[in-house]
Length: 162
Ligand code: GDP
Ligand code: MG
Image 1 (cartoon, rainbow, N blue to C red):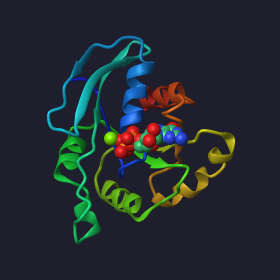
Image 2: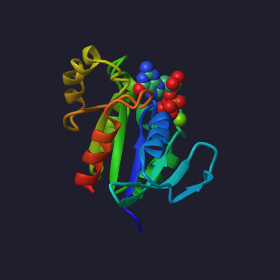
Image 3: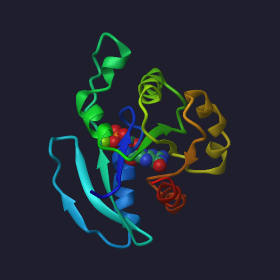
Image 4: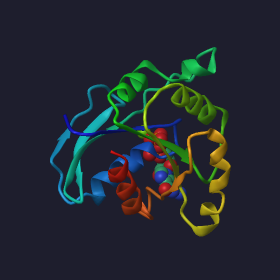
């Protein structure tokens, strides 16, 4: 079983864009599987000669009465398979309640987590990274999935953490 990277986070932070960026940055696409369900996509990727599996998640329940209910079973199942979780937040927006819900859930688990501050499109946004420390999951790694900024740096960190 390849080391597995699972991308989680509230809607619209750029999870799927990051997933596609991983696809775009890698040197060789080993395999591209259609999603098991509508929102879940996975692929086998490679970075610096190291193959790994990436799972994009999207299945999120927006109407749970309890905030924790917002973490859907689909996301939970994907995270159970993870060797490393990329918890994506939005550097252009900051922390929302839903981000805190995801963070609380991840902190209760025992998975390795990297906080990814996506949409860090410029230096000004990178200067806001300190705010994500309050999620209690370590320092955020800035990236701009859309423009590719620092995408290679993120993948380097991923390899170190596998
Ligand atoms: P998801 O719901 O978490 O999968 O988010 P998507 O990948 O669908 O992206 C949501 C929106 O954010 C889209 O309009 C993307 O183009 C935009 N987006 C994603 N990454 C970036 C980024 O790095 N910078 C900016 N400015 N926008 C981004
Ligand atoms: Mg998505």
